[in-house]
Picture 1 (cartoon, one colour):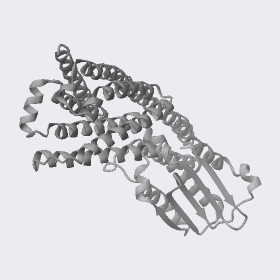
Picture 2: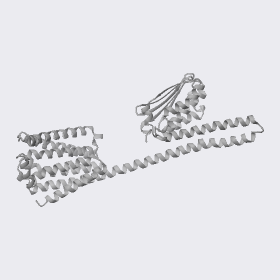
Picture 3: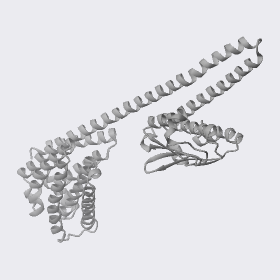
Picture 4: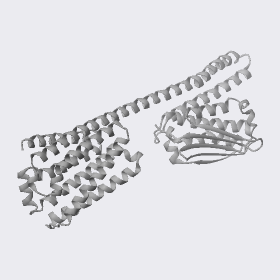
Length: 439
């Protein structure tokens, strides 16, 4: 046949293209489509090309049809698997995945049974012929099912694959119908071959365009996510820089004023000078503590820094011991390990420290319970005490501490609830979506 060299040249280029893109993008759909191309080519060559047909008759001891039809069935299974992975309809249509899986398994099992009987056991079983014809008919129904959902999805890539499947179904099935229903090698004449060639050309064009288009979409999405990640990281650094400027900068300014006053009063009023030097010492400890908090928030390497629970326990130890406050911790280590976003690490730590400072200064509590857990896709930070509480209506009058809790929780995309009653303690509950706590 004059078109045979063109056909095999096209198939060879198609396989090189598919395997190259599989190695490049590491996507299984390229591999499954390559398998479909190989198995279909082997099947058709066994009938359309005389040297292949004669060789096949010798190898299969006259069982050429049943042997090679197993390649056609296995190729169809790979085609279904390609569509299932490529279209991603399994995410939106669960039953689509079930139908495709069942069809794949039926075709693969049937092809294995037929191949083993004809090649390994050298049996020519006539009851396989009606099975082949039945599966060929069922394949029509399944392909209509696939095309319906591909076009229904209204996704450009899926629609392109749908039109390619239509071309494949109409031309290829029309071409191999004489071979399947009236088995005769002479039926694989020029017109039959042209049917199959036309279907494959349309199929290759549509599927290749869809594969390239989708690969570009995936790469563009990766680029967009990387830019978004870098933007978020930059924003976190800006926020940490602002915190350092506002908090540490203000403290350092105060220390400069205190040091000037202490220097001037050192000879005239030593008592006053000592008072300002104590403020300087307190300010220095505050700056060191704030710097350590920022360093801890930025450093997510577990081997080089303390965990959240360790920092909270170290911070609370002296404060609670000095006031005879009993503190109980219930911090889930798995949840703690998932907090990798700098902004969240910093704010979770500072919210806890702010709440503890409020408890020590205002609550008169003897017991405190701190927990960090996960529930309903939310990170839950709970801080509860048995102190005197306060009137909810006067929350805004309790100082900037509670406002700071709300602001920091909002920065993480979460919410804070403050439950309190006079003489019944206070409960601070911060809820943050788990999707927001990791980079």
